[in-house]
Image (tube, rainbow, N blue to C red; front, side, top):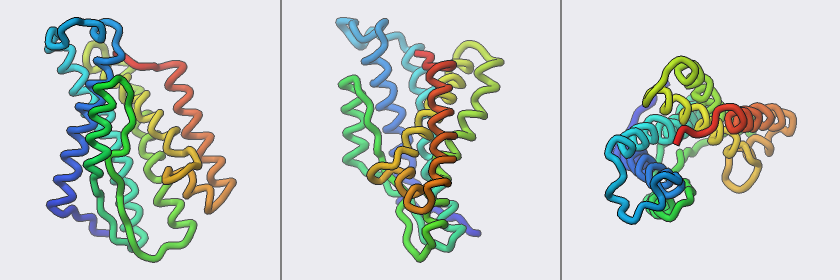
Length: 210
């Protein structure tokens, strides 16, 4: 299996990653009680901004991109032509939404073409949420063992990836859950319970550091 990236695709990945980091950083600033009421937003400490932005890039950005790249790898495995394409309009909305204090991110998707069976289509879809579940599990150990900025990033990594997994398994619209359910109700139920269960556990026992 040969997974390649065009120059345009690498550019889209880089822009989407950076924009997600900015959007989530703005969202945290607008929803964090310590900073959202400041009369002058420029007085937010640089250290706090750095922690949130780096944490966003390593958790929200990486979680989203690896989710999408999982779709690409599995699609190529099944003989499809697949590439990530950023949605620059939605990236702009994500940044503006963060500035307004809400977060809605649909910064792009892997577009693939070729013949696949319903089962293979479902496997391509479920690969993304399962990668987020794996990432959430990987972040658990450093969250338990580390403190300071590293511990905060790990905590954010657990919760963000768990939420991405659960949200994407909703069987609605273009979300992954709908594609899995079209193939198998039993398969969808198993994946849905896993992903949503991980998301609920993260909300209840891990939470957000900022």
